[in-house]
Amino acid sequence: MQTKLYSQITNALVNDGYIIIENALDEKLSLALKHFAENEKDFKHAGISGDGDLHLDNSKRRDKIHWLKEDCSVQSDFLKFANELKEYLNKELYLGLSYYESHFAIYDEGDFYETHLDCFKNFKNRIVTTVYFLNEEWDEDDGGELVVYDENNNFLAKIKPKANTLVVFMSEKFPHEVLATNKRRFSIAGWFRCDKKS
Image (cartoon, rainbow, N blue to C red; front, top):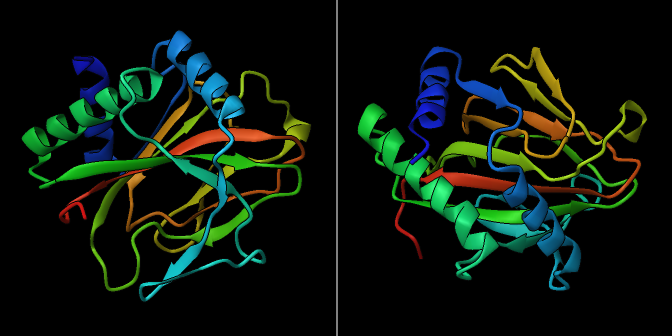
C-alpha cells in the first residue's frame, strides 16, 4: 500500500479540496495503460447527463470512452491503487465511499469537454474525482489542458495532460473543463461514489 501517497492526497483534500501530483504512480503502469488504450477498439462517444437523461451533445463534449474493468492485468493494477485509496479515505475521512468507477477517455484533435461539475445536480453520489493522464510527450502547443475552477468559478489551475500526473478533487466543489486538444490525448477519469453499485 502506498501510504505516503494516500496520506498526501487525504491531507490535500482536507486543506484545499484538490491536489495535482506529478510522477504519481509507477511509470511502467502509466505506459502499460497508454498501450492498452491505444489498442482497445471498443470506445464509444461519451454522453452528458441532466436529471438522469443521458444523451450525446457534441457542442458540449466530444471525447470517447471505454470503462475500466478487472482483467487480472493492467486495468486491475490501476483499480487496485484506486480501491486502496478508497479504503484509506474512508478510514481517515469517514466519507462512506462504496465503490470506484472509471473509464479511459480519448480526445482526438479538436475534441474538448466544456466546464462542468462531476456531481450531478440533486445527486450526491460522486464524492471524489480522479483524473490520470497517459501521454508521454505533451507540449504547450498541443492544448488539451484540464482547467480547474473554484466554487465561484475563479481560475485555480491549468494542468498539462502529461503522463503519470494524477489530479484528485472533491466532485461537487470544482467545476472543470478540458480545452480543445491539438493531438490525440489519453487519460483515465474516475469517481469514488457513495451509492450502491448497480
